[in-house]
Length: 256
Ligand SMILES: NC(=O)c1ccc[n+]([C@@H]2O[C@H](COP(=O)([O-])OP(=O)(O)OC[C@H]3O[C@@H](n4cnc5c(N)ncnc54)[C@H](OP(=O)(O)O)[C@@H]3O)[C@@H](O)[C@H]2O)c1
Image 1: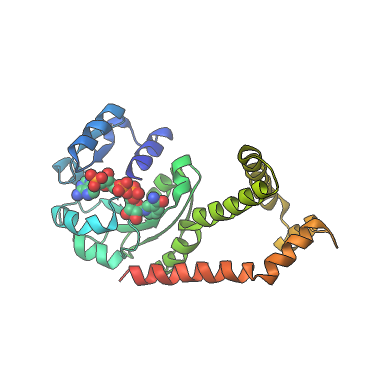
Image 2: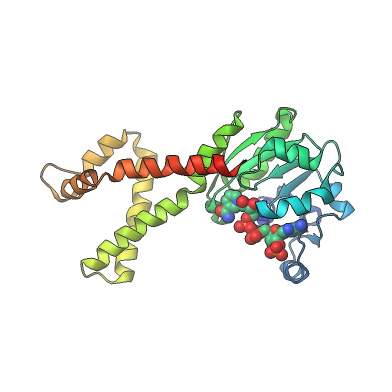
């Protein structure tokens, strides 16, 4: 994820290559990063890191406790620290890093293709200008939404953070149905992917309620209605909602 951000900043010329520092603890990985030739490669406690204007923390949450003491109290007062670590709250970051200039962001996998969805929140002491600056950086990976209330990031985690997996799950079921009807894997995948893409653009452009969009495909007594009536009977709509709410609850549990 850290690399995705570095690449995205360069792609949009927001950061110059000579101003991009990639900090990595593993020596072999550092060598690999050097070969990419996209920025200076170093370790997290290099004094150059403490000179940065913006620092993105993209280690796994379980690695943060080992990293934090190396960083605590060393950043410049005007530096903004952006954490993308799932489940670590702003107050915990403040305590561990000894600074209040903290933004907490929750991206999703779409950032890898520049179509991510990131929800983010900031410590009250972060100025509007700093929030705008971070938003500008995060937007190189897709869309962003700012939440004043940090607790809503649990919902962001459950909806857009985990969302790609829900989508893949539904796509997989549709492809499996295609194969059960005698289509080859390639044929089924082609049909489903293009259908998903077209449907996304229909939602985006139609400006109609979802119910109306559904009934524009499902005519009375037809094939779509036959499928939807099984989904309803099996409680698919409720199961999806229940699952997503459970994900939110789990995000809340994991953040303590
Ligand atoms: N992937 C997603 O869709 C997604 C979505 C939302 C949030 N996130 C968050 O993004 C973060 C990164 O996820 P990821 O999938 O990119 O994880 P990852 O592939 O494990 O990347 C983390 C990197 O940090 C390095 N690292 C660990 N400790 C370090 C230290 N002390 N100094 C410098 N580098 C260190 C790791 O090196 P080693 O491999 O050598 O340990 C690894 O290269 C996680 O906190 C996750 O919660 C991810």
